[in-house]
Structures are given as structure tokens and as C-alpha cells.
Image (cartoon, rainbow, N blue to C red; front, side):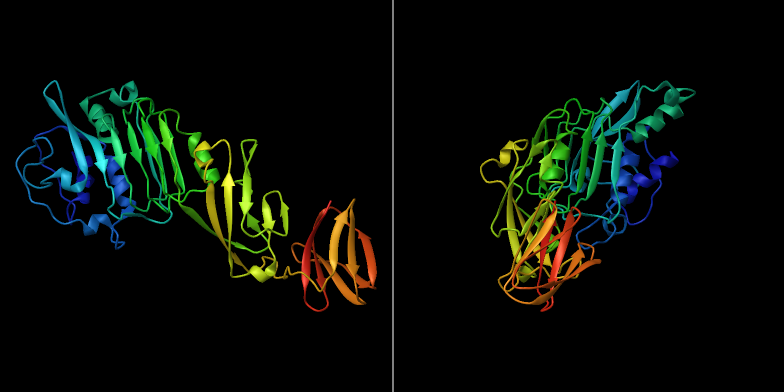
Length: 372
């Protein structure tokens, strides 16, 4: 019974050893892992912030327990299913509803639930203790998880073909980054609407939901921050061979493999991109909108149009059209100086290897150019 000890930390201000009229409580270790990874809305550990609950006598439906423990599981967002196995009593987690509680998953933590094979002979061999150990860990009756309206980051669930879960809800979790759902044959739906996921994250999740419907639209507006010369949407421009369409409200100066460059005069401003991809058809009408705040150049070299000069490249040659006698330095994108030029009125050209360059004029203005 020692393995029962931690299950009640969720509902009491101190750890309480259980004295009970039952044999086992399914999913205890999984729930312990979940609770240890989450705080309440004030960032207080749930193990400390949950109020003490009164005791009652024995278990009836959603009520538990003789001596010490819970009064009403419903108030804690949990529901148990009762199972009588040859007069041994098991109370298996059936439902977890933590919707709109403002719970916050701790930074760096992840919750990974893998349903064990409850018929594994190695686990059951030897004595009833092996069987009870399985029940402590399994989620054999789990039907639904509702974590909507919280701030989860990372959750993985593998039902091993056994777990009967039908409904999973992570909607309105603006911090959600990773959600994996595998081997849940009775799955009906997974809801991630309004969770601020990028196009590539949503598509990755579609590859793990093996049955059931993935609900992901609408997503609201995805907020991003990038340096003005390195707006990196490379993960979103190609979903498994299908190219995305991107519509900008402010046109970038250059694009290279999904990395976009904007004029340095836009530092501190926000540009908007709307993405469409036929692999995520629910966005066909309105697209998925990104608002991108532009910060200083990653190289520290400004990318700003010059005083009427025209800079372009073709066939491995860089061309600079200038109206003045002026000095120019040419840098690689990482800031290394590779060439110094003295321009005269007219066109100056120089052969360069394929790369991205910054053409920096003596008056401090500069422009980025791709040489192919």
C-alpha cells in the first residue's frame, strides 16, 4: 500500500497514508506525475495549494474514503470508475476535467503517459502484488481529458492500443508547444483550437493523431519575434512537400529558403503574414495569421535602402549602380568583411561565390543581396 501514499498529495496539505477498504486505485502514478508538473494560477505548487478536504466513510460513486482523504472527487475535477474483480475493489480514473482552472505547467517539465500492457505476464507473475502494481500505473478506463483554458507546454499520451480514451481537449492553451497522441483506437476528437500553434506544429500533430478528428481552427493570431534580417518561417513554408502560400502586409526585401529579410527602417514595427497550405484545409478561407515584431539585425549591420543606388546580382556577379564616387564594404551575412570597393558613377560589378551578402556604404547605409 505504500505506493498509494503520493496519490493524496493532490488533495491535502501534507502527505497522508491511506487506510482503505479497497485493493488498488488505477492511474495513481500517472496522476502524481501530472500534479507534480503543474502549479495553480498563482504559480503555487498544487501539492501545497490544494485545500484540505474532509473525510468520509468508504467509497460511493464519486465519494471517497474512510479515515482521511477526499470528500468529493468532482470538486477536484476527477471521476473514478468502480470495478469489482472477484471481490477485489479497484477504482480506476475515468475522467479528468481541469478546464478553465488557469493551471500552469512548470517550465522544462513534460508529462508522458504510456499505458502499460495490463496483461503483460512479466508484470503479473509471482503474486497479486504484481497485478496491483499494474493497476497503480494503468489508465485502463480513462475516457476523457479536458485541460482547456490552462497553460500546458508538453503532453504525450500513448494508449498502447488499450486505453479507451475518446476525447482530449487542449483548446485555449496559448503556451502549448508539443502534444503527441498515439495508439488510442477509440479516439473521437482532439481539440487544440485557439492554442496559438504555428502551421508546422499543427501539421506535426496531425501525423500523431491516428484516429478521430483533430480540431484546430481557429487558432487566433500567432505572435512571433524575429530580427529584421532573419524572420525564420522555414518550418512553415513546406509541409511534407506541399508549399505554403504566404501573404505579407509589408513585403520583405529578400527571401531565402523561408528566411525573410525586411528593411531595417521597420525595426520595432510589426509585420503580418497570413499562411495557407492545402494540407491544413480548415485554414483555406482565412489562413493562419502571424504577427511578427521585428528587432535589430542579427548581424548588427543595418539593412536599409541607400541614396538611389541599385544593387542586384546575376550569374555569380554582384552589380552596384551608383551616382557618386563612394566607398563600399561587402560583408558575409555573419559580419565577416570579404571585399572593399571604390565606386565611380555608373555600374561596378564583382564576382562572388553563392551566398548572402551585406553591401555597406561609407555613409552607414546598407543593403542585403543574394548572389547565386
